[in-house]
Length: 119
Image (cartoon, rainbow, N blue to C red; front, side, top):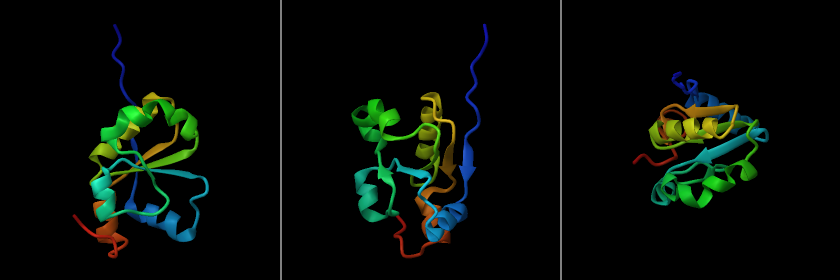
């Protein structure tokens, strides 16, 4: 009997995210925000596809048709916990280049864009 282990989730810093966004080099990136709509209303970053985890059943079956499983995919949440869960799930669906944004939008707002509200 062999145990299955998930591969470790790769992380990307909020500074690296800011570099991508500020350079306009997001063409090859898939950006996913898994926070709830109420959270998005308070603070958001442009160009992210909103996929609230509470609505998982509404979008889960379409994930491989809406996104390329082999493109670099960055996942965001408030602090990095829900996005890590999403990264694990995406990897289980065959996504090969998934990265969790460390610290989430909270860290991004604190360290990279003070114009984004903290909550």
